[in-house]
Length: 309
Image (cartoon, rainbow, N blue to C red; front, top):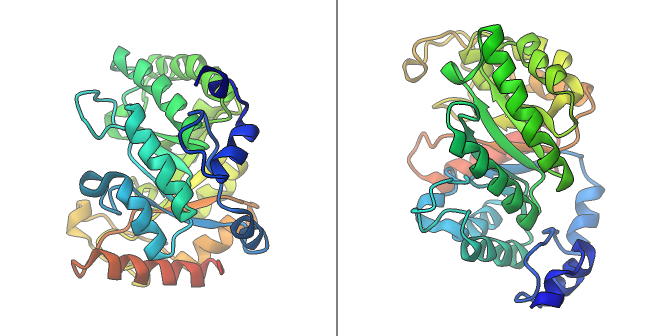
């Protein structure tokens, strides 16, 4: 085992593809060659879904099979920092299960959702370093950090604390080819204050246009401003199907705010215009209660609107 653990990533990919699942653990998950060629010839956007949407709490690594059956390209599982949780991705055996399933179904693990609280909990820093290691092992390029509500800085002192923490974490992620994607409740300008303060290529923005509107920001204005600082997108439509137009509708589940400008075709154009090439990760709901049927319906709509075939 010792010699195999010293293999570089490329060497291990070849061995993994040949079925040597029990060799090294540091890996870069990649689909098979034919799948990669097919993807390369298509739209540069690819579709993923959050682990919770696919039933991660119940199915764990089984969500990769669910993603395959739904017609997705990838998954974005949650990374629990709680070592007492037997299903946490901090555990080696759970990572191996995800890795093996990803190879079996040709599904990319494109990102991890690691929550937030990077400055309020010292232990969170250790957990995020473990998340970087997990991302490296599973071939994920992005780790979502949520800076929402009280987690987003307001005062100069709070900005400094967040920026200083990210300055410590960024090189750790960068050494493994991983990016921290910040999902923020602040405006585009406030988000750029953090990005420019950290000034490291491993800290970018994870943009959720539905959440942005919840916080009374306008995606069609912000997407061009944030531009290439965006590393990944969350795609959702509240409690509705993606195909439903909820412009001007009061959504009681979202505290009654007006979802003006939630125009998915126009958002698709804005994303294309900034030259974004990457993942759209679904965080959609199930209006009918049939999770798989609703997921497929939303996937079909997104592929049509974003021209992903």
